Length: 117
Length: 110
Image (cartoon, rainbow over all chains, first blue to last red; front, side):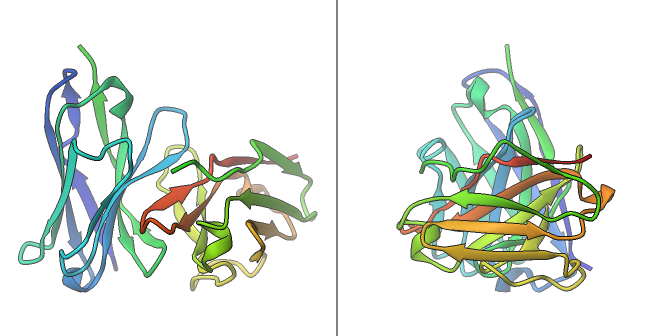
């Protein structure tokens, strides 16, 4: 059974940094692209970033480009999202998702990031 | 990276059929057969319902079906049940190798 467990969320001040982690199990992590998707309170889903299986490609939404960095450690079966220069509008639940091709076939339960002074 | 356009809400009675539309451009929905649909109940993570326009993952009821015409994709739910009441989101791959979601549609089963 695929399991994705996010961690690292919390309260951070504007301009601060946070690193999210997603521990994966139940599948061959190194063989699949992975993504981060976020959902602001009472809002819709927003794609944030994706990384290819081989770490060769990383893609970002315009809203986070230059501030967020996606990475993965295939030896630890873990996905990361380094978030810098955080803004109030980055407040959201951040989901880690496994890519089954072009789609998100498994999701974690999410971790809440709150950016506030 | 503009969001795909979905109706904010749709409703139907038990047993009826409803369709949710998802309109994009030739750079996303219209350009690729990479449209997927997700169901999200309150406080829960999204769940994949349809992938690559019209394919159903194992375990998803055959009451859910997907299609596409031009720049608009559609999700149809037949034989509405109370448990179908949820938010639904479409998603597409884009020509920039990025991905985009629709704004979401709240389905009410009356």
